[in-house]
Length: 517
Image (cartoon, rainbow, N blue to C red; front, side, top):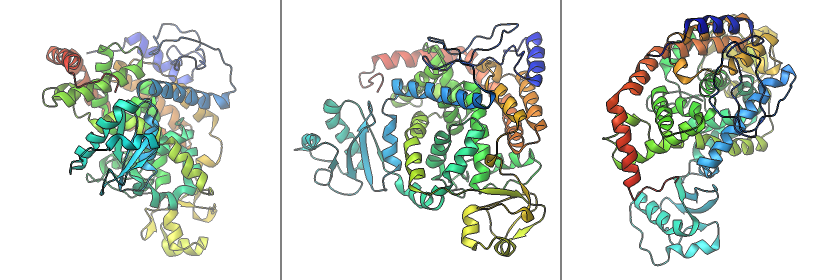
């Protein structure tokens, strides 16, 4: 069991409480090579960054720009990593921007669309080819009946000409109806994500593939809305705040989704494993990063992406044999981060197609019925529900009502995205983003005290943003003990180590595996 040295922990908690000026650990983790680095202050003991610095450029920024600069640098590092390991990630834009009813093929090396086939129909006669010279590849081939077999035949025919391909059924119908309803809200929702240092297009792309921008959509397991969080998770967050969370309102969801994502991205130093943890769970992604470290990954991005390739390959070879090594990290887990990044363009296109509308927010001090809201605003019930999908008969006291204009008679102004963040919040968030602790520390019991101190700082800002960060950190702290036990056991179990090595040997000897595909 790994613990944090007591002297280090006391120093860490003290400096977190007062800010970054004298912090021994709030040193910025360097972004990917060739991106600017904000140099940390001198520290009383060394904290080894997770990522090697190949090129440094000292940058002095105004306080108001530091968070945006950090977020952009981290995003740039993630994109560079995807371009190296998953250069075809842009393919997923074609999946979510086209109507259902087709199977699209793209280049795994460039993401370029190669062909589209009807889900039901003649794949030889009804194919749509991006390049005419590709059309003859199916000439003379008999196509099987099963859709999965058809996809395999086309991939086999294309790859000698185009290189590795990726293919998937189109999912545009999942997005299009809600894009028409809510496309004009993307600018406002994007500002909410950016308040928590999450790039707007990344946060909204995740919302797109999870929910199609619907606040009400539910999975078979009853996960709800933007983040597809389970009801019990929303209930825990509701208990950690002093107001009512109506979970089917996207404008409410966006803040909590963003805060959770920024906590995970701070933990890893990258949005790639952070997104994957949101989807696949902390233990699955923890195993994946550990496996990537065993494979020699030089930084967190390499560790995650190498571990993901390992999980994909051994699951394909023998899923039962290696289930204790990869857990339930499956094919969608492998693709999840690249699906999100690939749909940043989808988000930009939808936003450009709609004139953007403002969203204002009022915290109510009394129940507000639909009829009261109609009289106060002049809006129809349909329009009220467009801004407030959770609205059925009333907005309960202590909840938030969202409208296209501010109305002081309905409650206090809590639309934090409409104004600059309080300096105290920016200072706390920036210090939090600079946490450069090893992953083992994040899993330890002692590190909870560090996060509790940040909770206090965010809470002390008295801001809406601070309330959200306080609640989300409280939620994360509740999850830490179980995660620590599971990953500590995984690291130290000799049987797991032996099984991992067995998987490595099997990958090397399996002719059907193409490394890097």
